[in-house]
Length: 623
Image (cartoon, rainbow, N blue to C red; front, side):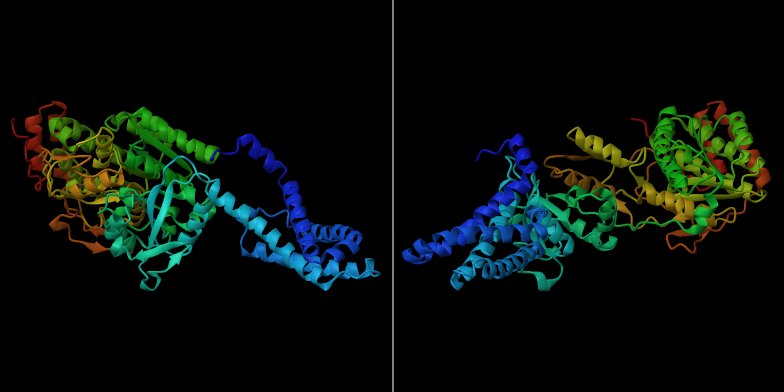
């Protein structure tokens, strides 16, 4: 079939109402003349003049009533039952007007009652069928393209699925051919929705995928809780299908976008099944109308901190970062979003430079400080331990001392689970950062706290961006060990909990975030391959490279001596402060600094072991 040109379609759209009126006139003429044609030949001859005049009156009655009742204002492609009911009602009114008018105008020669009855029946039927035919043509014929749509299974047979199916029937360029539905309500199995059969429950998905040759699965339950979403997506991940998801229906309405455009690919984050965190009023009060500084503000965690802090309406936000490209990127993003409503200052500076840090605090006098600047690549810090100490330990020390000196109300250190019983230099330096915070908390008016959490999906240095690059290159994906596990959360979730924990600190605490259940890196790699539309070990291979220097099979979030206490937030726990001898501790730090700046890596690692009793270093083996 050849399709109508775009210019022709545009012309037809411009004159849509006129065309519809002409179609109705033709239908009404046929509807009125058919009963006369069915009559005897003599009647047709004797009443020919009456037939012509009354036919004109019949058409006029219908057209006037149809016009007044808006029959030419509706978009019949999207017409629902109510529109067709209105058309039937308009037809009844039109016939009534015609009958009454005929009794007055054509009183001398009566029109046969059969003409009234049959004409009304034919007129209603023909005008109704013409609109139904048009609707079916627009919704079915015109949507065909040369593109082969993916065979799709829809999970859910509720309102969202019904709306989606309805919309897909209207789409001009569909990317999915919906074959079947599944729903966990057994009463729905075996029935159909919009002509699509509900063939089973979510447990039947793998079998139905094979039986129906499904290529794509769409999760269309916007209100599904995170635990069940995780369960269903894990079932789907066992198949070779491309997975897509329909977000919250409230967001769809708020965005004002059609349902189909809101469908997105399932992300690895969806498989974590973690609920959204909402900031408490107490936390927003900590930031609102305050001068807030974020070090490392251009990084993955730091930039998200800046986004969420900006939403709380700070008096001023100061972003400090040594890498100008990242700092510029978050600056431009916030300027585009807030304009002059946000007092934003960006400073390119290294936290190692104590004089520069001191000058920044003296000028801006921040009341809240979030310290996210750090070196965190484990293998690189094994090779360059002195740089890890200079940046992580003494960068933290410089910022913390300036925060205390210039009267900051609160200092929040972003720490890591690698600080627990560290086996690598990076983890040992972060543990030292926590010790600095706890030591300063013993003697300062500033509230010093640390927040410890595991890996965040998509952060700089995390495994997810690496996997995506490897998939884009055709593989293989590199996993250090088949049994290695890590705790994961999303960047926005981690930052919200950091803000919450920072607000509730009294001084010296190490807050531990609930990271959920540990995730096997191998499972993460396999799922990411599947979500990218490939088959693990067939399309994209996975290779095991062995544990890297200082790397553990699993991470711990809490040291034994810290204990664990609940807080008002069920996602946040707190370890009791460890009592340190602040005088000797800072003397040892001064010694460590001399060794670090002498760039003696071997002595430096030993000094770290002496300062951090739980540090059990696993040095790189000679190749």
